[in-house]
Length: 588
Image (cartoon, rainbow, N blue to C red; front, side, top):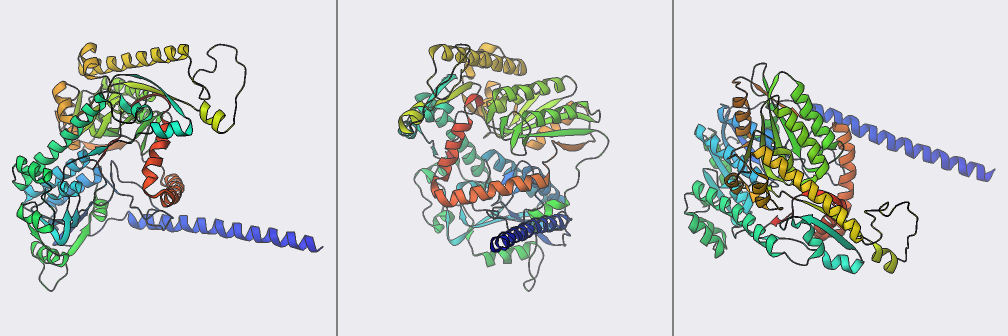
């Protein structure tokens, strides 16, 4: 009887705790839903306001639709960010908004690629045509932050702050030694000397081919960086190069002496200046509206029945559905078909920001672009990167727009098959045995080395895929296969070079691509619609919360080694046949 009550009490306690947990989850969802309703409300912009542009947040392709973003989820302190689409639209709207008198740009360490930052930077330069001022201030300017800030009318640095201006460096991580120690052999097959995505697994340093293209890639980015700053700050580009090369900016006053910033000021002094620019008196506070609130007032652009569809292809390419940060061939293909079959949509812009991925999934998306191109104009706009599979899906467009610092090309394929035999058998004592009905029944097995016959078969398959890849590009770009092969082979190009060699048509912004699509469709009044629909917020919340918790504790445990952990995860994910950019270089 005593045991009965003990088990009964334990069951009741378990039921009670489960009910409490369920109640908490439901409560969180309800609070999140209510907060999302409030967060989506438009904001009232008072007259004589300053638009506070905080760019120390992720700048994604589209603003994340996370109704639970403000809830205190573990690991949820990181901001969801703002979409480039909304950011550009808001800066353009502020240009003609009588209530906005100036922009206060605060940025220390932006979370965006250089092509994305150039889009924002050019939007700020266009804003200044309204004769409204932009004031930039920071306690610390990283190089990316200064690149954005240099577009402002005035750039101010904290008197005890720092401005980083030292040139670009790129460092690649190699795993050959680690893999040898744990007993893993990466079996590599590739097409193209420049297709160097496999090098971190088979070499301990860059090959001559890869060093050549990384040098050109980093040099091209740096040239655009210096050219844009030189124009905005009215400093000779050669002088900027010398300042960085000699590391002349060693203390705050150096930044003033070399005209990199206009003055050293504290934040209270900045606020006083903003008061004057916005028409406020000394005793009044500055009226500000944050960019994250201001975007809530964005409305559907354009007018009329005709539409231009923008289809976002963002992330690595794979089969299946994907999500807002991963290109799933089914989801993107469905969006392209929807735009093709809608008679009100007169033109399509495919916005690509992808290093590539599955060769098969890339071809599936390419096919939908080709079919759509037969019905209506298709323009491609490339973001920070549209390489390998990312270039594959855009090469059939009528016209391709890039930024000077877009990374593109990388026309090539590779196969990566790990061999865990040494790890399993010699280190862990695990052996394998089995039967098969044919010599190649277990081709691509990872518990033994490839045979010569298997390698021959896979190499032929890669050659076939590569031949199809360059044929697709040759047809889309109206070039010969031989010419595309000569600039292919996995070679990565920056936007300016891509235009010169015919892989892209012109340097232009995201909005330039939309205007070009409308012009080619011969429409003047039109609305811009966006596809695919964003992922269901509740599903996104549940998925992201789990991922955030995992990420939070993994970062706590690994510290600075977290990036290496992420790269090793990609090693495992990259097995099979891939059309992917040959490296992920971190620019410092």
